[in-house]
Amino acid sequence: MKQPSLLDYFLLTFLALIWASAFFNIKIATYSFAPVTIAFLRVFFGAIPVLLLCYFKNIKIEAFSKDWYWFALIGFINLVAPFFLIAYGIKSVQSNLAAILMSTTPLSSTVLGHFYTKNERFNLIKTIGILIGFSGIVFLFSDNLLIDSNNFSSALIILLGSTCYVIGGVLTLKISKKKNENVTGSILIWATIILIPIVCFIDKPWNLEPRLDSTISVIYLGLVSTGLAWLLRFKILVKNGLIFQSQVSYLIPIFGTILSYIFLKELITFKVLISLIAVVAGIYIVQKGK
Image 1 (spheres, one colour):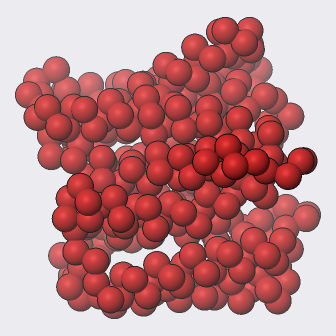
Image 2 (cartoon, rainbow, N blue to C red):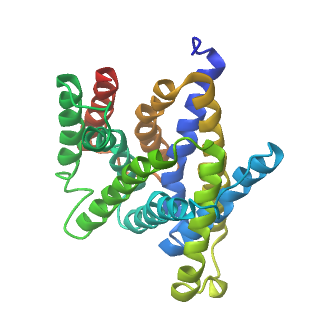
Image 3 (cartoon, one colour):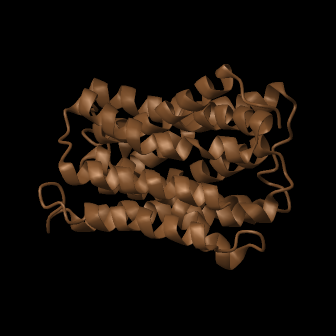
């Protein structure tokens, strides 16, 4: 891979902003939509730009091929479950907390990778990074101003959502030889198929009268934070490689905290700042350990 240009760093920062902006938009979406409906609309609108790209690039979608069960399983674990869990949890906690909690994904990936891959074993530097990062999350749970007995379980649910991303990533290794666009398009199709009967039975969305801001947020979550973000990720990954692209993890919790303050005036406590620093430092150290 060649040395990243200024444009490459701009695109990386833009991707981080898009993913970070998802958290306060999920919060706004919960004002009118239930978590299942939010998950469905995200995958539905998110599939549009990805499938259009596959059409124009003449990339075959293999959603209903002999590997359909892998696409369906990954679609459920990597999209349906985390989208639902995050939306459910974020109803009761600040969106900036969700951004920090979700940023543990690279740390969890390192732990899971040690046991399920051959080239991601622990070393001393990785172990230090993981301990620092997760200690920041433990410290965050001690912030009684933001996490109490009423929303403690919601914060845990968001952490469970981040774990689903990690498990989905490991499962994706089973079909790693397929094109990224094909895999993403296929799992979005299956996630939509899985959610259609659930959302119709549970939420009956045709009876909703949503607020305008919630409607805009949920469309944004699908088209931009899901669809466009994945396409931008592909571009960065192909041009600059996985190590460069993974640096987006440092920026997401920072931008998520800033954006939640700008748009929702959410409280930023001293413990939030310490936890944020610890998580970002932990991710950085783990990346250095690789």
